[in-house]
Amino acid sequence: MRLLLAAVAVTLVASPALAQFPPPGVYACVDGAGAALGELSLFVAGDYALARTDGSSGKGQVASAGTDVNPLSGPLKEMGLTGVFGTDEAGNTVFRFVGADGVVVECR
Image (cartoon, rainbow, N blue to C red; front, top):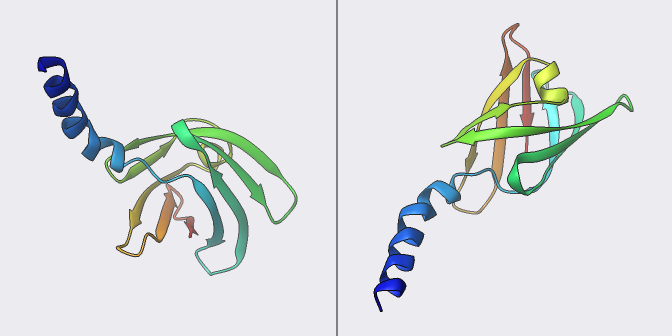
């Protein structure tokens, strides 16, 4: 019985943190002017792939803390982007990345 209670307590404490990890999926990305940039495929554990409209592609990994998304490697890191994400009540998720040079990328 104590083991069961401990497992439930751990689940309740960990659930909010787990819920904040960006949801896996395929997201269409546009630049700050609304021009198509490519497709972001986000996998479990922070792995991602970015296929750009110019034919280039790459893979990398992101770290997440709350709603912050920080590329650790790959094309998003090479572009100097950091971002945030939000999911509305309907389950729609939007990522907004901004570079130090003012570049904006939005994926939904």
